[in-house]
Length: 302
Image (cartoon, rainbow, N blue to C red; front, side):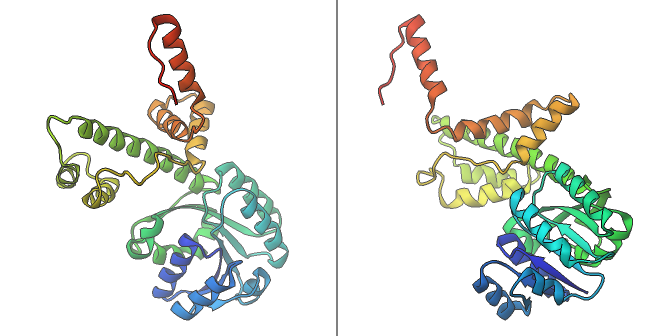
């Protein structure tokens, strides 16, 4: 089988490497020609000089996998791509697109006889060695065509991937997955902060997190990564207290409001990320002002 991979960044590039290891032929294109040349030399990927060149090197039905940032980059690429495709061809969006956008795009492509799959993709930079967790939304017919690719990208042919529903279902599942991830990360961070603050016990956080990795209820891959990081540095003095959000946490909270289903943990975890991003700190300055106004509490000058 041969497919085209458009977008060869950290995720896309490693996916190409894993596919080549599994015997899947890949035609790759990226705006950075050096990245294309590097992958072609490293793993035998077929280099393409443009999207049109990549599509032209595919057999029919053509399968084109996009690994691009969500929003405008994916939208623009789709509009450029569609005139190059024919009925029966398939487009896979493996980025973190909003599931509503995926539903719209799937309907638009269906009108032209082109199949669409939205693949919620988890695994990050570790996916090359460990495999990717793939939640895909598509028609049964499209899923069947792409199945050999999913089996190679996943941790094993029989696990780590699933056709979870129609178009949109894959990205919706990944959205909720990331919302849960926010909550788990926040809980670990708060708990470890409390342990570090209990100076009378002088906890070794590397020791504790390593301990929890074995048979405790809170063991997880996130804990594995945290324990490994704390072995080298527990003070984290060189890391800025700023946590970005990719957008999927916001979409999860918005969806909880739309459904009327309470999700306080996920919502608060997202809000805490916003708090870390507030460089002006205006609301905190107002709080200090109020305490001073009603209680005479001292205000700390900057």
